[in-house]
Length: 90
Picture 1 (cartoon, rainbow, N blue to C red):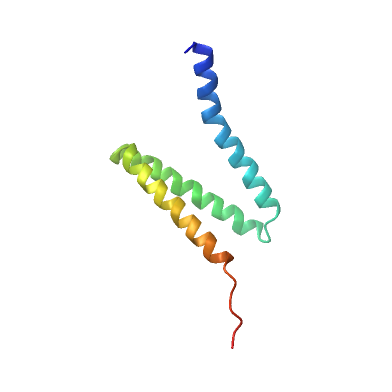
Picture 2: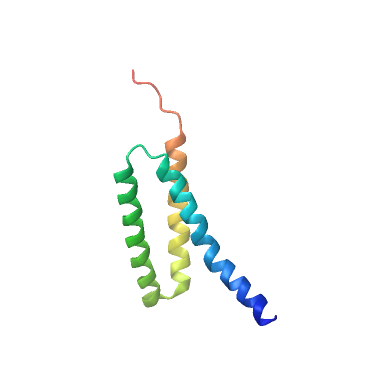
């Protein structure tokens, strides 16, 4: 692969997720009913991500992939649970 093509692929694979994450956060932050809680949640997530990054230095990337998959699964489950209609109180 030519050097420029490899550099472009590496740049896209590193920059695009961060750019899309920033766009997604800004859209959701603008719609937030409680901006302070939204920003606090974002900061806690950033700290947790940093801890996981350092964990990968101790355990290796393979275990970090398993942890990331578990976190995504938990996010899907909790998101789906929030969307379920609540039964009216008796």
